[in-house]
Length: 263
Image 1 (cartoon, rainbow, N blue to C red):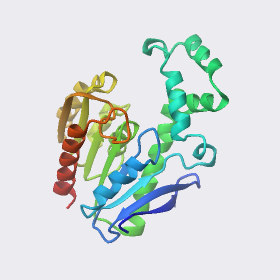
Image 2 (image 1 turned 90 degrees about the vertical axis):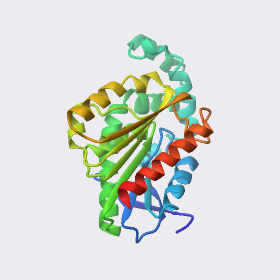
Image 3 (image 1 turned 180 degrees about the horizontal axis):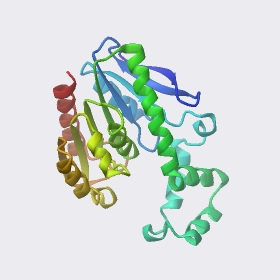
Image 4 (image 1 turned 45 degrees about the horizontal axis):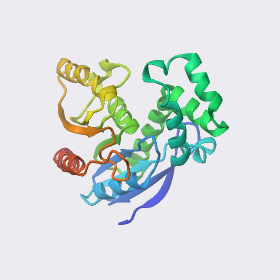
């Protein structure tokens, strides 16, 4: 399965979650790769294949698999909606009138994306956590690995952090992801975590002190690396914020981390 294949698994509400599967199906170690807000992109597939080259079985679920989202939450639709939404000053994104003004200028598709992905993110991520848990069960049922890792980027970085508080992952990697809503959930993490952060990413980095404090409080293992002068999403080689030296260093740290704790 050198080039990978598309597969699917059934999640909690009967939806078939389209997923990219690559690597050795007989491997004793499996890794779940969690998408950015853009979905199951070429970057996510490429990163999954890179992990598979280390000997892991890798599953990357497409978390927009439901019929009503598959054709709506495309990279193009998300990009245009985000540009419109982020024209609202950060301090006014919770203001009803400011959001309404932006929504009045939006197309129907843009309104749906803004409503679902930005204003309704909390509800959406709760569902995504359930979908990821079912992906974990799919790997366990079909391939029987003995160790599990998870890695995610941006939105997926926050999801990898949250998922590791609910499932017994042996190793977790978070690329510039937000903290879980309940920091006390850090007490439930099984394995070590590696956090990789951009230097110029205040929204995410504001949560790092609380992350460290709670890992200390609950006596959990964490490694962190902050890359100065880089922006959010620096690892995505298809994105505007790509920083090759930081991305390659982060990859070396990630691959070494997973080899140490999963092999």
